Structures are given as C-alpha cells and as structure tokens.
Length: 281
Image (cartoon, rainbow, N blue to C red; front, top):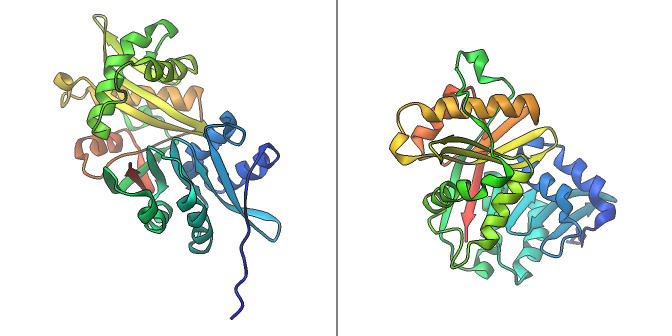
C-alpha cells in the first residue's frame, strides 16, 4: 500500500498568522502556545516550532522551548511531529498541554528523551468567564498587582511555591535568572499579591495571556494561613481583576490530587473544561 507523506517544516515569522489561527481553534487549550508565539517564539533562538502541512494548510504544530507543547495534533500528525521531537537533542523542563495530545506524544518520544521526574497524567483544566462576585464570593480587597520594585519581596513566595509544586528548587546557586523571570512577570502586570507586614502571604501569576484567555499559574498561600479561607477570597480577587482588566476568560490547570485547591477553584465558579497532562523532566 502506498503511504502518503505528511510534510513538516520549521515555522518562521511569516507563519505567525497561520500559527495563531491554529491556536484559536481552541483558545483555552492553546493559550500557552499562543502567548509564546506572540512573544517571538517563531524567531527566538531559544525556541523551535515545527508545523504539519496538509493541502497547503497548517493543521498541527509543536512548540519546543523551555516546554514541549503540542497544538491541535491528531494521531496522524503526532507520528510525524514525534519523529521530529525525538531527533532534537535539546532538553526541555516539561511536556505540557491537553492530556489527549501530550501523553500519546510522550509515548512516541520517551525512549529518546529518557527518564522523567514525574508524569502528571490527570490535571483538571478549569475556566470561568463569570466574576466570583456573581456567586456571592466576596473578594479579598488586599489583592493587588505587584509593583516593579517588589521582586525581592515576591521571590521567597515564588521559590517556595515552585519547589513544593515541581519537586526541586527553581535555581541552583545564583538566583539572577529566576529573579529576572519574576521581574518580567511583574513588569508585564502579571503578578498579583497580598502583602502584610512586609511579607507576601498570597501570590498568583498570569503565565500566559493570548486569544482572549489569561492562564493563571503559581498560586501560593503562606503555609500557616492555609485552610482558613484566604485562598478562596484571594483567588476571587485575582479572577475579578483578570476578567475586568485582562481577558474575558480565566483558566488554570491543577493536579487532580490537590483536593483543597480544586475545592477553592470550584467555590469561585471555575468549571472543568478538559484535562491537561504534564511530563516533568
């Protein structure tokens, strides 16, 4: 039987509109990839984007930078994308995205990429377009954007969150690169905090903003304050601000085993719209 070759090629700056249109088929699922593309992912030396072309149309792509992210892939297109990803000699921090795309892609490349720290195969993907106040949730009025000069105030909270969520610290030795990343989020007005007595007691970031979606990440509450309702009212404050000032939809994904966080997000009106998966390298 003759086999029809499905062509792939590296995408460049002239492909930006087509790549964003592909992401826009499912804005909530593809917010992360679209944000990276808008930040220059098609021309960045630190990223690689390969597309699958059928009948002259871009039908799937895979973004590889600090993360490997499949976009609108099918069983057929994952086979050719997997072949490309398998041959790349670069390393990424994770594979992430919709579980039905990430897990089959990982199976195709696992033998070449080697051992992993963890496979989180079931992460509820949540979203809302409704302000929590409409559900009777009173937002914590202390929630505000972090200020440009507060990066060193945010750093301990961000470091603690990352270490406990991912399982290893965000940097070894100097914190310069990690601090620069935090400063960029603050400068973009993507970090929300509650500061009490000169200390951050709550933090949440917008990791990606694109296609009318804002993807929340890095949610953290000071350990001694957990279980008292701060997470609910603070997250309500974040979502209220996001829906008013940033995007008409707020999304996030959460580990299925994090029962407390899932209950918090449900209380503020976030509903599951799918399932993500993350393979941590």
